[in-house]
Length: 384
Ligand SMILES: O=P(O)(O)OC[C@H]1O[C@H](O[C@H]2O[C@H](CO)[C@@H](O)[C@H](O)[C@H]2O)[C@H](O)[C@@H](O)[C@@H]1O
Image (cartoon, rainbow, N blue to C red; front, side):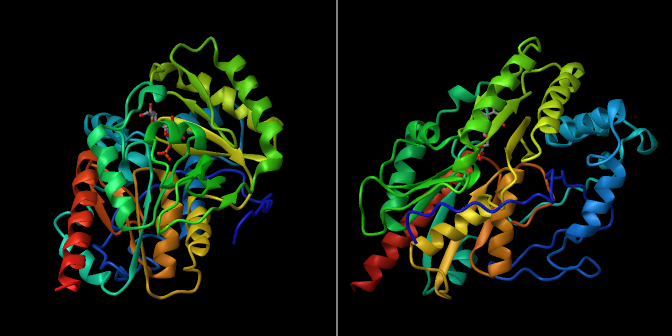
């Protein structure tokens, strides 16, 4: 499927909600293809989405109410997107002093993808592995300045080797051109703007096909307008940074003093009120404004699998590695397809649809290198 230009409006959902873990629920270590169901949790060890939404709407009032209460709940949600902050602040408070999301958080860790490498490879036996890699926090460490989130030379070499072994795509919230400037590997697929801007490799290889998909192209002028408005609205908030990601806009608050987070929330909320066709999602110390179309990193993954000819195949094994809430859409798709698995990059436990974890980008690099070595060995053995 090439040269697609699909727009699917979603007027119902306004906002992507932060996740809260119920005390007593747990994430069970998943087998590579099909994680076991946790008793009393509606499958996969997590509470059902509708129950989650209800809980969050009660706790956070994101879609209802207004004024100061609403902004406070936004700020709570911004805190919740910062696990290190969460740990230090909630640990020093007694249970009754904690906010609801602090009380409900549970520290449960997924099995390590490195420790379980052989098990993962066993599950992929006889199938075509396809690699999907998030950028920030996965291939490059998180830094204060988004313009300086460089990946190491060693990581680039590893990703280059990986792409000679398996079809490989970068799936990022950043605009495609920018993420390409960081990665600089022409042989990969790139899905920028949270999957809303997909392009196939410029440099051909046995795994690549030309492909292009921009399902939110009609939103370009609106996003430009919103970018300018947000720059103007946040210019007096020290540390706030607005990034134009072409089909979405990121408002960073990593370098904003916490007491000024409400100013950032106010600015974003006022813009969202004006543009009902845009919605909010959240990443790591960043609020992201994007079109209300039914398209996300999960849809991008499905589109790319289809483009590669694996639409209805049972012998494909996609591996998606990411660190962010927006990567959950892709983890969920893999879980639902019962194909391959998601790997969450995180040092702290999170509510997730991933099956394994890696702690940081250096571990991601080790995992990718092991995949390359495994593939080479398998190739040598097949020739003996
Ligand atoms: O999907 P990704 O590739 O992970 O992109 C998500 C966002 O990543 C960037 O922001 C994050 O990384 C920055 C650099 O380390 C950090 O300063 C920021 O706090 C993080 O949120 C990027 O700048 C955003 O535009 C992406 O949406």
